[in-house]
Length: 216
Length: 285
Image (cartoon, rainbow over all chains, first blue to last red):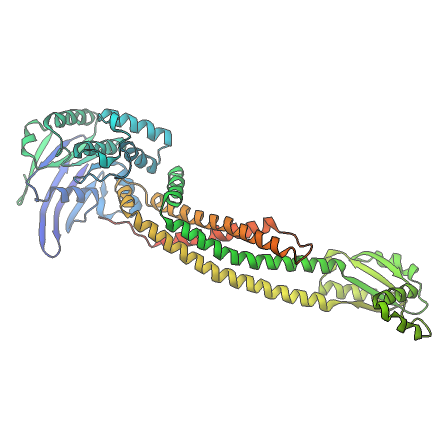
């Protein structure tokens, strides 16, 4: 599902963030990459999603060489992936429901299907009451949930999560993990990154550590 | 590509977007009005030419003593002849008198009628060209009793020359104003893209196809062209109403003008926005 080989990333002029990273995530696996802040977890996630180019190494996601893809091919790959960014990235002046339905419409869903799926995912994530609230009126935690609903509504084969629970309390985090567990059991591959050591105790799946020496 | 999404986004860009779309449509209206004025002038001239052509007559002067009535049935059978009528020398003199008006008494000093009998021929539309007229002239000259065949070919030539020049001017104006319209749309589209860069990037991150992201800007360009055309149509119609007082009997070529303005507007909008989105690259980051 994900195969990283010899990934290095240096930001100009000479800020080395990642070096020689190898990683494999199998289909239907749930993997958490832990590590302290600034170690390069988000950069690695962005490299997997094709948002950042690695300085060295190859990235294969769903059998595609991410950084060799053309614009249209990359878009096609991203349709099969779901992502929640650390900085959330929502349409700020639109409602929570719009944030999901607009993306579904742009991906080719009919208006009716997009509306039905949006309602379904907002309900699943416990956001039904907030559907018509504009996203800038929501708390960070609620915004994270909207981003997660948007990612899941695409029915991805692989879900990438960047600090997805950073603004949720323990109870909400457990609820989200339980819900994601159900999707994982149905075959969804999940790769998440987090720096919060306190949630380690109840994180499911394989847990890896990213340090300056690499992944252990 | 999701056509519903593309159309909705394109409409949103134009109607709910920034004032730049409306400013572009206004510039389109001015530019297309110039195109419309030239088109209207050309249609007036075409109508005038048609009117002249319908009145165009070939006059066959007969030799003294020739029997016009005997030649008439043979002439009407010729290709290109719509109708013919005989004019006796007496009728010709009477007509000439009417033309001269008060000066007609000058004719009284003549001992005899100098005007010959003639046959006047109306032409079918296909025979209103110079080449066909010459062919007809040759055929008419073969008839016994025909002295001379007279055609006012200079008028047709002048009209055709003027029409040719006007059509050339039309093409030139279309090219120049078209270039300006394309530039305006390019600028408007670029502003629109810059204004919505964050939204485009977000859609792109969610896996929306590049074609789906770019197409709404073409729809916006088409809207600008179309609304510019609608306004310019109104302007040309008002201009025609003002001119129709001066130019009696001219009709307004509503469909032709509408097609020219809408066609030009849509084409310029499409080309301009197409060029703008062509140079727009999606960010990897």
